[in-house]
Length: 103
Image (cartoon, rainbow, N blue to C red; front, side):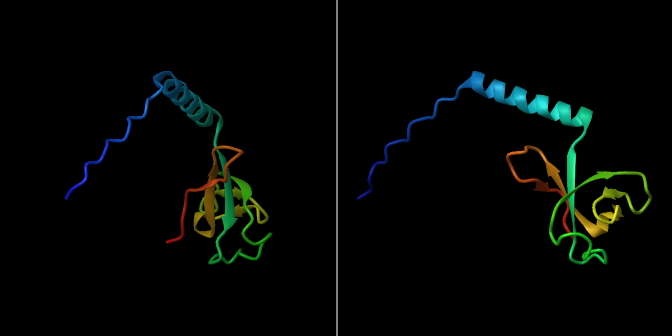
């Protein structure tokens, strides 16, 4: 004998709160686009530079126009994209988000 299920109550959406949250996200995105995104890197275990610095530690970097060695910063000073995993920091209260992965 089938039982009837009572529908779950609909969740009320605070439209004004959502607008404020979306406005804050858009503002943060505009600031990052205008003034730059904080990038971090760690040396991949497959890199010949893996022994430089502390193992697995993230360090601040920027992307430059240094030819093949375009990741600038860290213990060695410059790296190829294939030597590092890149991370983006969006919020100081949350861990950085990995944005590149080894093939």
